[in-house]
Length: 217
Image (cartoon, helix red, strand yellow):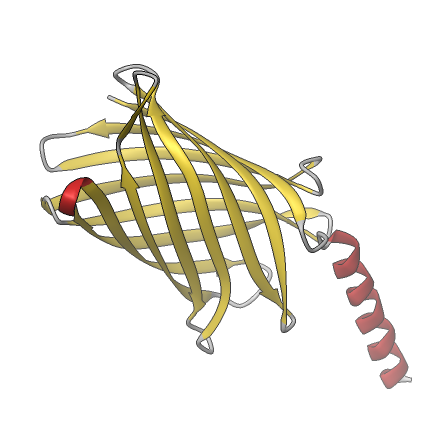
């Protein structure tokens, strides 16, 4: 009897997961709004909000707030401390995650190109599953160009996600897009993001249209 109950519970769980999983190749839309305030020549604070829509951009499934502080030791190296509050839809309900993270950022600009290597360590606290640690590395390159009199910053980036509870590479994001200035304090980005995620040993892809609005004070 106990075995039957176990297998019934397992079947129900599999059906629930399947019901709320998104198809391989799903089209999504992500939008980020960021406000940044310089404290002095070496430090700044930031506040960010992001929403994500999946299932052919028809369903809100993710929402986060992120507050942080960054200090520039010099023009090549910065350190940051952030706290992120995440709400993600799982099995039909939005579940909460508390995610403090620290960032070490390397920057260099040879031959007019801008390279950035961001190293992030996250502690992920959940009320509904085991807490975990995760390392993320995002390497990006951008260059300022003139296009019909407007300055654009085309960029490419790649980011890996490494789960440190068991050492497992389970996600990769490839970015391609451009940034531009709207006003002296307002900047925007538009990009395509290919996200590959591993779930139960299988890799699935998502095609994402991303937009970002940033205000700098």
